[in-house]
Length: 281
Image 1 (cartoon, rainbow, N blue to C red):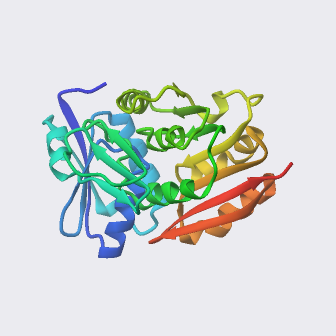
Image 2 (cartoon, rainbow, N blue to C red):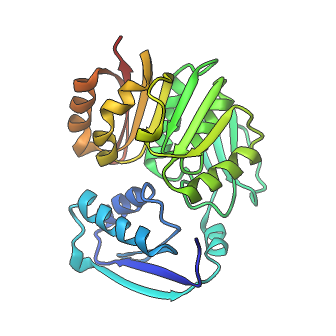
């Protein structure tokens, strides 16, 4: 629930490469707003408990960030959405997909168009990980398929799955606010086959199997839930994994091989990997 106080994490003294990596990584930690400065990032969130989680996850996932580089403070709430609008530009991925906000008035010449609410802060498509997932989704057949979108955020991937012909899409996220955002985006895009729910993987029914599972999260969650993911995958089904740093590629591949997958395809964008795995029968 939003309050009159916003909590601030200021991450200082980042190199140019680490600035880019950290910005991309934060896209998966559900920060309400990010401000980029010369050599630092400023994160904003209304929920103090979530700020604590973000700091801990960042220190665990980004070895180049130390506790000494993080400064915390509080400040009165402001209209962060207005600032977000001013910095958000449309995303065009090849001639395949455009992601735009409701306030964008642009000419579009791509196969798919996804419109997101300008109040969203749970995934705008700008990050390399989402970009790669969309590119990988272009390579697979989704027509008539049942799809799970694990950690849906703003539901961009779920919406694209329906636009690509998926018959049923189950989109879930552990964060209630993210699901509120996802549901608004689903409605904005006139989707009828997407069901959104607040849940974690362990809450979902293992007896319901999906032909395609989309998981754009982070390395730790992907590793922790590999067996649960496989349990919900139809034999010979496709699993698309993203949110994986290049340095963690082998670790993730070996983990998913150990539970019953094999690697079929991969895409690298910058320091990030997207993997297409096939579940063995």
